[in-house]
Length: 213
Image (cartoon, rainbow, N blue to C red; front, top):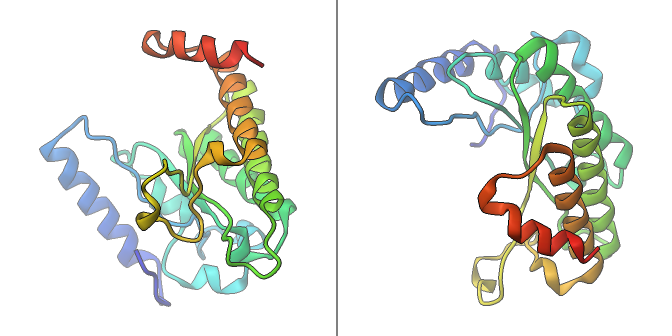
């Protein structure tokens, strides 16, 4: 969803409430989220310094207000550090922790980081930079998981298998083609399974995967 500058956050917030209620009226058990970047708006003045730049508060979105309706099941946030603050891993960690903190006492619902990644078109790109972004995101998620906090998980943008190259953009990877990246992903999977437990259908696969490490 593209965002243009907006005078207030009321229009988008009202639309989210209306549409999420409508979907739930059709299918009560349909899980819903908003899918915006997670920018804080004027209704959250104490969070101004968390936004990547001043313009983020003027787009008509407000993370807390947009995620608050009971018809929104979990809050969602995006992380693209090359589009915000070049090379700033500290920003990534601060951005994540701020939203997770909102999930516990304020929203009382999980916060999912539903898109994160690093473009390989960046000037001077090195795959190790992507590894560092992945590790930072995973470490903050695990930090929350150990405390049974609101950090509900993360989805990298984006993973492929061989043969899907035509669908790739400058963020996509085939994870097992780069050993260091794949190891970071597997380690995170295994430690989350240890922290949260596993469901029966995953147990054997995870046992095989994690016992190798």
